[in-house]
Length: 427
Image 1: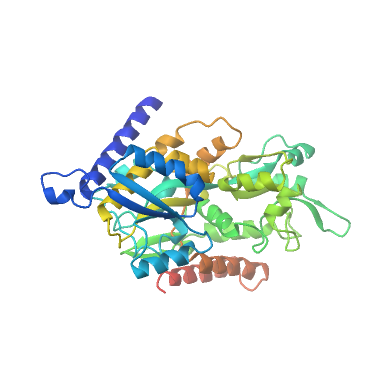
Image 2: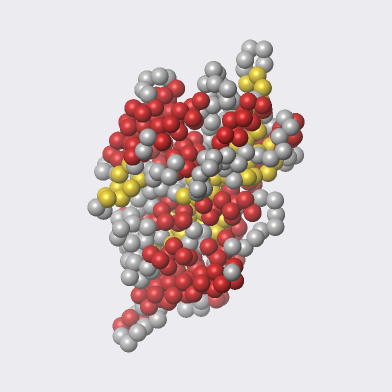
């Protein structure tokens, strides 16, 4: 059965690539003019170090000899600004790695691939669900190439000391474990915590954790209607209950109390071996190892709602986008398709410490201690179209702070946040 599924995936990928090649002119069908623009040099921008990219780019150039990728490394801190300035001046790249959180901001600056050349069915059969963040009613914003799922890192020693055999598979188990693991001193200060939940400013990836909880209710965060995007946060009563669940972990009167505002950043507390569970991305593994090489920790999928009939976690997705201003458009489109569906995708994901976005690659079974969890999580990961990462972060922060300060109820705070997210799409 698995072999049959792999064959089907390969067929879908081959048809999709063929469609792109024909559409771009790389495979001309009758009209000699279509040959113009296919082949040549494609300038690619990204933030991965050039030393790491060199071999992958060279392998691609050797395989597809009519194309030459010229990779230019950019600073992660200045990538957005540099790219905007370059595109505005007409000196930008033909192709660039696009993080999902910038997809909306660049939607009018990149070429939207029509479904006539890459049908939705082919896309969904080729890429895992998180890659659908790049799908709009008008077409495809980028080809997914890597998925960085949110997972749960856990300190094995702390679990052993508490008599806990396995990490929690659902949130009910997490609540029970929080009661056992969390330790306070004589002044009721937390000296060992179970999990970083309940606050915002000292919890790394708080927005992503909240998004994970929202997605697990089955509700979308953003929806598209009539070609416009809106917040979907207030579409379900389940989300306000999720906010109450989240903030309870920082309530000293609750049984699951395990976090407060006075504690260090959650990642630091975990690396200091004072936090049992830490929600972080797959790509953080190297950072965690470097922060404490002697720490005995592993990763597991994030807990799910008990008795739920589906799984969900947050993720960050990297795609390949074609500039709408490219002077070598046909080649850029073909190269993007070949990179995402060819041999480039897996080594790229390995280099940045994530899972690949393609389903056939996720069907592979890594044998190390961490990547089986990363691959499994990538299959049920989801993402959402963020209108403005910095501003939406402020909205989520205010939503939590309003509840913690009793300024607003969870329902009112959620409505306020939902309205503000919708407004970010029309700024």
